[in-house]
Length: 184
Image (cartoon, rainbow, N blue to C red; front, side, top):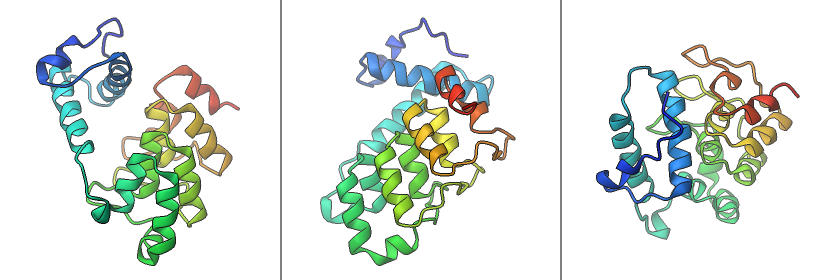
């Protein structure tokens, strides 16, 4: 597991702008990934994390934004309006993308409970599994999004669904406060 005392100051050496909140997010992600992939060193995790941040920060012109782009921004009104105007997007609300994730997985990964609410209203399946068998609850729990975990559980998210590695959402939870929500 990552050493929680390490502030990952080497993020700057890799060209990743770092502040305390980014360090906290990286620490949680590193702990989670090292739990799933023992033996992966921090340097490799930093490179992967930097690549994902760079990909996620790409600027997409407004007219070209997909439903997923709007979800990643946490733009609740934009997601609602996009679904209202695009019947095809609403019809494919449970379809996975090239990364094997559906819109609800992206929203849970970012901790956007309000966006998840809009997706559920549009017909998203709260227990939809991605290509690896993970549900939105797996994503929210592993990222430490307690409010999102609570929201998903209240909306019928099942805590006993196992992914392809035989992990439940509670077993991938990044901290104790999230794990306690599964006992409620």
